Image (cartoon, helix red, strand yellow):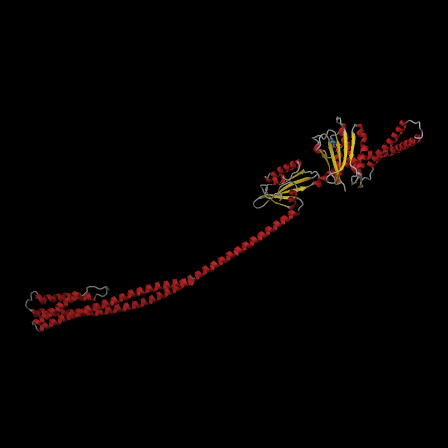
Length: 605
Ligand code: ADP
């Protein structure tokens, strides 16, 4: 049902109720009016009848006074009886208080009629037999009372007229009021109906407005959410792009240490190891992911220490941490730096774990350190070098002269047949030794000359032989046998021969010195050259000395670290720098028992 229809129904109902009430009241008032008219008529009829009966009695008395025959006496008595009947039949009261005329008339007439009935039947006390007197008395009494009774009748008519007029006026007023009431009801019904319709319309409008507002709100919320999502996505993408643009390996951790995001370098770092976390370990605990990247025991120890410090940051004991640890590989020496910073969002605390390969910086640092030491060393050596150079030059000439003279002696004595063969052999030997001494002097001059920075294709085997010539006297003095196992036809790498020579001399001298201080029965220095599996030229210097002191092993390549009273502790660190600058690697191979093995590689190309 529509709002209009239901409102009209309500209005019609109200109107019906109003009309019903009006009809009921109208009916009731009409009934009252009819009852009044009926009572007025009844009263007028009763009083008229009584007056008529009263008149009849008076006439009968007068008639009897004129002729007192029996018929007139009987007629008189009959009229008295009729008047009594009428009195008996008359009502003594009416619903309307003001209709008291009948009662008054009754009250006036009844004693008279009673008296006359009494007098005419039983006679008047003291006047027995005097009927005329009785009749006269009766007539007089009735006549005396007649005007009063008549005025009652007139009064009744006036009261009736008055009552009817009042009633008519009242009814007219009542009808007007009723019409007004009805009109009021109509107006009220219409107003209520209009109000109801308006209320319904307002409700409908309100519902519509609410719906529209709710929709607007939803739209605004959706727009806001979309904008927020877009902004979030944008900031996420920005963050991800920023993270990915950084060279360092970065992982974001929550306060429990779970990896929540990583950048591409981190993924590459994790997957470059033997780790099973191919996606960088997002969703896993950082410690498990980090540990899985360790390859060597040394690295594992470094990571364990780093994790200890990271845990302190995650526990809020400190805000940042930095830790550097070595993670050398077979083919490369390298270091990692782990650092951690914390940041807060609205709800939580996060940490940024940064892993960096700082090998290059470490190498440069080491190199700088060595170069500084080398500079100091070089300045000290330069004097000795210049002296040695002069000495070598001085010695070269007599040695050359000795060699030439020996050659001349040999050529001349060969013509003599009786010359002792042993003498020839001895002179030959002198010549040979002089040549050898000359070679040593040349190598020494070569070693100390200043223009040493040029790289050129070099026969590595020849370089080894040259250095062995330099170190042979010391080896011989210490009872060390030198064994060369040099692979023929090796490629000639482009190197600075003097620098690589220095590496070889350092390694050979270390071996000879180690074996010299050791009471081993076998004292052998073996030098191997060969092409390794990665295509590098590899040089292996093996000695049967005491090996590296375990407490010293970790300082082996550190500058100024030595176990020798007169040592500088620079040989190995300088050698490593030289080899690495040539694109190779120098390390100690401890896989073989009873021997000490230093190896270095040089790119063959
Ligand atoms: P230096 O020879 O001046 O001590 P190095 O850097 O060449 O400096 O060597 C550092 C240390 O390494 C030596 O003092 C020695 O203890 C140890 N070392 C080097 N080579 C050997 C070797 N072949 N056998 C035993 N120890 C060695």
